[in-house]
Image (cartoon, one colour):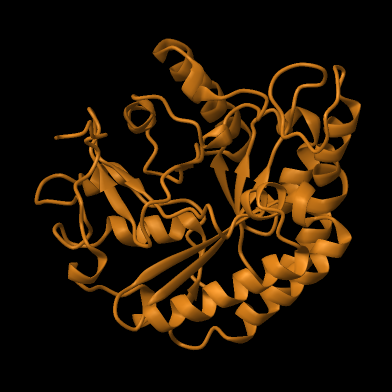
Length: 316
């Protein structure tokens, strides 16, 4: 029986792929994706800490702690380790707390699109309305940052059947919604191909802590163990390790202490085989590789001149 397929890319076994390196001959690329999210008060979707009616003061205030306190404490941590960040931004934050985004912008961090608000899911929308959501998010970020974002993570990692098509048509070079690989993969769209960059659903504080109830110490150990194991595996082929964080989760003091331990471990063990980068820098490197190297790429399929350089392309 042939099952329905998404048709975006074909099956490809990781050990059988062509080899390539990250800049400087390194083999493991590591990036931190920090989600900065804003929720509508008294309506719409929202991560629920505890049952509550509307207006949901309990959960709204818990989530906003991340923007008021947690993200600032995390900023201090990233600064102390000289660690770049890929900032996944709800565009409504430019009205709610623009100084927070400015603080990360000022240190050169990458800004990615993450919808208008996490009070909605784009995958629930008709195509015209989803296109409008992407257009409004992109225009808002471009107006504040001086250029449109190159990368996208859907609110709630929600996609419709046409999301990759709409993102490609809007000029995006890569998306983070797909967690099916440890290497980037080119996806087919009705426009130009778009790159699926690995984004974790395991080394991610919401599934790990809020859903599976891992403790702060356990989550930090997960980060360390994943880094050490992927570093060993990367001797055989280049890999990408993402660390997905939410300021209202790991920005809590008792969790931040353990996150610091995990990130300090990474910073102390970079060596000459680990590339501490941004998602945009990783995508930018892949876009320059010859056709046929990365799954989904074939001669003539990746219009390099149209892709340009990815934002946030620091190579630390």
